[in-house]
Structure formats: structure tokens, C-alpha cells
Amino acid sequence: MVARGVSPADPDGVAGWLKSRSLTPERIVHESGQLSIWLQRGLADLGLPAICIDARKAHTSLSARHNKSDAADAEGLARLARTGWFTPVHIRSQESDRLRVLVGARERLIRLRRDLEGHIRSVLKTFGIRMTGVGQGQQRQAFHDQLAAAGETDPVLRTIADGFIAADSTLCLAAADLERALKARAKSHPVARRLMTMPGGGPIVSLSFVALVDDPGRFSRTSDIGAFLGLTPRRHQSGEMDWSGRVPKCVDAAMRG
Image (cartoon, rainbow, N blue to C red; front, side, top):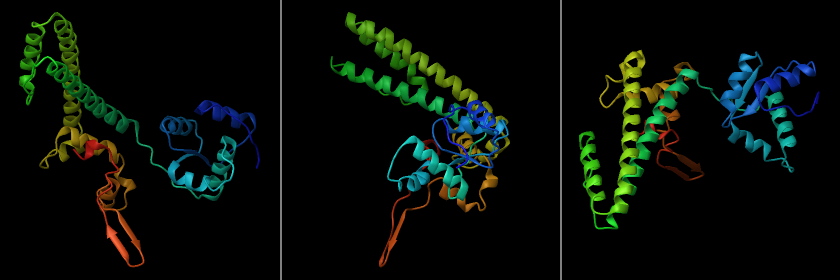
């Protein structure tokens, strides 16, 4: 053990801690987590040999220690870095993260809109008012008209209807703006345009696939992408027992839509 201490959990803090002790590390490992992407990019920009490792597999090694503490985990990670007994995690590019954020923002707005409309329907059913479904975007105005008509029957419902109509309209406009932005991105992206030529390949699925794969060169075989997307069945083999289960679905829901 050359040095031991505590540094701020940010790239500049780590670099300053190493510089103050005149240390030149050959390898820096940190576990995957919510801030690991930002930390990895920051350390790489500073020229530090940082590697993000799989937290689940690192936990298997660290759990063998009797004492669980931050200091013990840090020492365990240092030993993993020295021996090389870890699994690196691919850090996506910023462009891929921008695409994923854009797709995720649209999906979140649509989910909020559906939750709001479902709540409206449940509230009005208490007063014996049943609203028709909204199967297409053109029926959205009819939904608002029904809600406004229901508000005319009661002053309290009128107050609720005004607020819900404004909120629903805002969510619809915001989701439509994001969808137009996604379609424009898909038209300008050469790989997404090629994927959209396949049956069922729209702009959302194409951009989700591009953002998720990020760098095709990290796959040695094209068949590995299927396993990466969670399309291979689970298998359990022990002695005479050998069975295959369902696919694990270990990828985001946008790729299974």
C-alpha cells in the first residue's frame, strides 16, 4: 500500500489528491453507478487511466471480506485494480447519451399524459361520467371537449377540468415537440435512416438502437448483439438437469417496443 486517504468524489478532486502526493497511477478503477459516466469522462479528459468496472461483479469479490466499510471497499477495489480481476464497463459517448435522453424524455411525457388521463377518468366515474377512449391524436380535442362538458355539471368539476385540460394540453405539446425533434434527428443520422428501411423500424426504435449499441466495434460477432439486447434464453445446467427459460429482457423497454 503506497498511500491511503480521502478525496472528493469528482475528477478535479481525485487529480488534486494524486498530485499533492506526487502519485502517477497506472490504473484507476471505480464502480459503475449514477455518477460513474460523468466521473469516467472527467478523469479521461484529465489524462488519468480510469476504468469503470461492473459493480455487480465487483460486489462478488468485495462481499468475501468480513468487514464492510468504505475504507475496506476502497482497499478491495485497489487490489482488484492491481490483479486485473474485474470486468470493464463500456461508457457510451455523449452523442449516444443525448439520443437516449431525448428518447427517454418523450417516453416520460407520454407516460405522464396517460397517467393524468387515467386519473381524470377515475375521478369522473365517481360522478357517473364515463369518457370515450382516445385512440388517435385527432381525438385529443374530443377528450378535452368531454372534460369541459363534464365541468359544466358541477363547480368543483369545473375547477378540476380547467386545470387538467391545461396540464394535458401542455404535455401533448411538449411530447409532440420532442417527437418532431426525434424524427429530425433520425432523418439526419445515416445509420438510423438505414435502420428505418426495415419493416417496423421507425425513428424511435432506430435511434434507441443506435444509442444503445453506440460503438459496434466492441462486438466481435454480430450475434453478440442479440445477447447484449437480452434476446437469448436463460439456461440452467447441473448434472442431468438442463433447461432453457425465457429471455431475460435485460435491456431498456424502448428496444422491446
